[in-house]
Image (cartoon, rainbow, N blue to C red; front, side, top):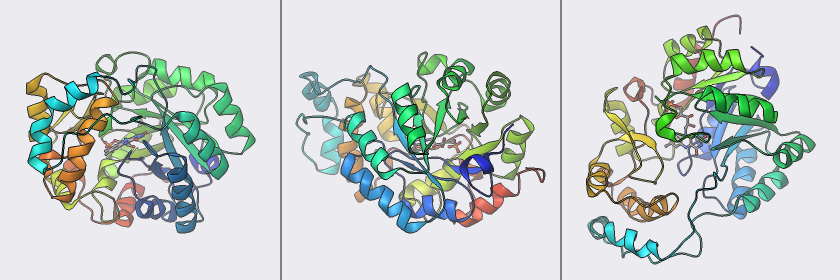
Length: 348
Ligand SMILES: Cc1cc2nc3c(=O)[nH]c(=O)nc-3n(C[C@H](O)[C@H](O)[C@H](O)COP(=O)(O)O)c2cc1C
C-alpha cells in the first residue's frame, strides 16, 4: 500500500469516478475542494472542448483533479454504409422523441491524438485512462509534464499489464460498477470479477497503489475496500445522484430507487457492455437483436437519448448506475464525501 495522498497531493484517498458524457465541472471541483480527487470524463470531447473544460476546472478549484480518456481498443468502427441500416433499426426511438433518423457523420469520435495534444497543452495534475495500456509515448509525455497517470483494470492480468507499463496507480473496477466495463485483454463478458475478489488479488499482483471501484457507496464499502488492501476508493454512482452532477432529476430518482438486482450489463446502448437500469430502451433494443458495433451504436442512440433528456423521458435515456445505487442517500457532493471519508481507516 502506498499513500495516495502523497501521490496525488490530496487530503483523503477518495476519488470521484469520471463520467464520460455526464461529468460536471461543479461536481469534480466539489470533490477536489473537499480534499479528494475529482475526476472528469473527456469521452467524445474534441481538442477545443478539452482545453476549455480543463481551464474551467482550474478556475473552479486550485486543488488536484483528474481527467479521463478512453484509449482506442482497435475494434472501433468508422462511419460506413452499415450506418443507415442500424439507424433505421432505431427509427421508432427517433420518432418517439421527434427527431429525424440521423445521417452518417464524418466521424463518431475525435481521434485520440487530437485529445492528447489538448491534454498535454493543458497539463492536468492527473490523467486516467480506460480500455487499454498507455503506450510509452503517453507515459513519457506525461512524465515530462509532471502528470500522474492512472490505469484501469477489470482483471488481474490487465492490472499486471498496466503495472508493467509504469502507471502511477491502478483502479481495480469490479463488476458492480456503473457504466462501461473497461476490459481490454479479453472480452468484457469474460472479465466479470466482483470487487471483493478482484481488489486483493490486484493488490497482491502489482507494485503500485490500488484504487477500489465498483459497489462502494457509503462508509461500509470504503472500510471494506481498505480491509481488502486498497489504498483508496473511486466512487461513481453515489456522486452521480448529487445536486452537483450533470444528470437529470429522473436519473437521480432512478438511482435512489433501483434495487441491487435492478441493473443489467447490456450492449444495447453503446455496442459495448455497460451497467445501467433495464429501462424500456434497453429492453426493446435487446429484444430487437440489432445492435451496431461501438462507437456506431453509442452515436446512434445518443441522438434520441439527448432529446429524451430534454423531454424528461427516463425510459429512453441511458440510466447508467452500479449495483449499490440504492445506497445513494445523500443530496450533495459534500455529504457523500463526508459519508465516504468516515469509512477511511484512521491510520490512512
Ligand atoms: C454514467 C457513468 C459514466 C462513466 N464513464 C466513465 C468514463 O468515461 N471513464 C471511466 O474511467 N469510468 C467511467 N465510469 C465509471 C466510474 O468512473 C466509476 O469507476 C464507477 O462508477 C464506480 O462504480 P460505482 O458506480 O459502483 O460507484 C462511469 C460510470 C458511470 C455511472
